[in-house]
Length: 216
Image (cartoon, rainbow, N blue to C red; front, top):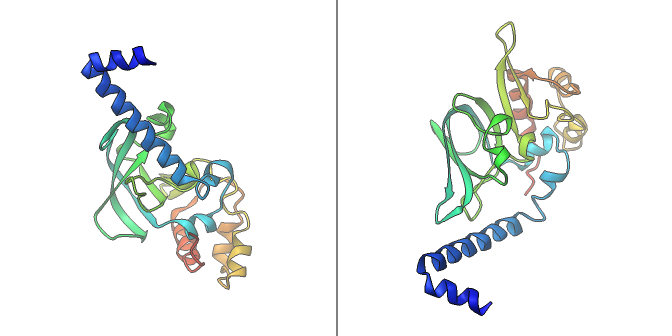
């Protein structure tokens, strides 16, 4: 241990790297600790649309305008992605033409492909408010990130990255219990076991579910 410390003292650049790595590790541990236990459930269990709506601080629809992969400000060893949306519709949260959030990337596989953000994607995101470290992200990970696409007839459809599997489970019962019963059209949407649903019907259901008590 003493020889290692002596080596660092003899090499200022190496010592600085060690300090930066240690500081980043401490912040990363703090980020994880701050997320538990309240947010750990998002990684371990399925959540439905009622929960997403009740829990989200920001619900926004938009087109991805820019994606930048970079280290967290002040802690360059912690990888993040900075995403800016051109806002098409805000269902909850700050109004504005753009919305930007920074998301921690826990693994390389989330840098691209299906799990990544790509310029031009049209999304509906259910997000938490930024943490004390300025980080946010979809609730339930892929469950809270929805892609908008057009079907063969040109109609706008929406599905999350689980293909909406289980998304509407118990939604009518949750709404009924809170005194916000669904109408016939909303019940039809909420009876979908999986697969994309029309964007307009999805938005109508979310607007209705916004009546439910918030979950902290």
